[in-house]
Amino acid sequence: MLILAIIGFGIIVGAIAQLLVGRMGQMGTIDWSLAIPAGIGGSFVGGLLISLIAGDGLRLRPSGLIGSVLGAVIITAIVAWSRGRK
Image (cartoon, rainbow, N blue to C red; front, side, top):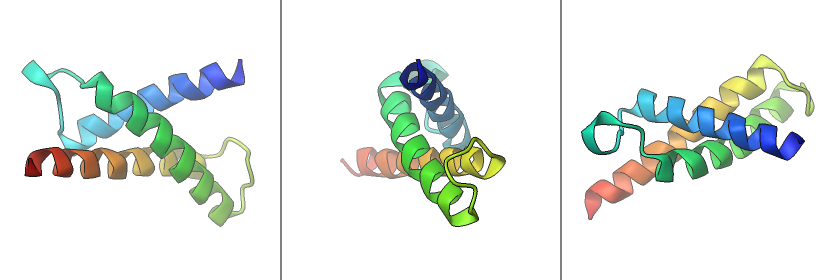
């Protein structure tokens, strides 16, 4: 059950990251092929790093949520930049 919650949260974070970066798919919709991996990866890495740096441990705290969004934004921006270079 926890895994499904993490995946669901990652998808939401990935969609938020696309809105912040301004990298949308065709016709202004969210590109789910980018949102899902960027959200899950960014949520895991960014949320974990910021939570551990802030000293919150593995609890659900605002620092982990902010880190999740920042991680997803960074991944989304990198993917958008690399797709734009081709």
